Length: 108
Length: 113
Image (cartoon, rainbow over all chains, first blue to last red; front, side, top):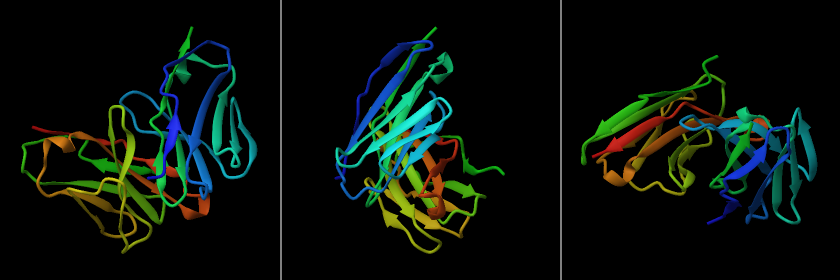
């Protein structure tokens, strides 16, 4: 079974700080990588997708991919209390595999 | 656009009862998926359909069947519900033209007593 691993957290950061979320995966053939945000009791919401090595920025979010190290990360700049949620890493290789999620808490 | 819709939102079943969870998408996506989400387990793929007329097993298919009725609709059936199937079920759809970015429905919270 191909695996995706994340720190379960909770990760607590003060408002305005940078939150750094990490994900590793085992399937070297994976081609597509995604970050989803999930608020309690709600469905996952796509926030970033990345397909090639390097950084991809979208507003306050930056996704970083390193296929050689099998590592994906998500940086959230100027963190806001509304960013408090569980962040799911997903990897598309042979199949779609989600990580267990990291719970982020942004403290006012 | 409604995106991905699911019915029902909540359901309580007794052990042994059957039911079908409905999912529909209006984004013209080829691929559709069914997941279950349990505390501490993340999202686990039950079945998926890469295109109309095809279905494939995911990580946890036992106890479930699916039907891809047409391009829009993908249903999940529990033939004989068990307490271990108590979970939140999410349907998702994706386009292969957008790198398989998945978009999720609101979910069905199922309790089997």
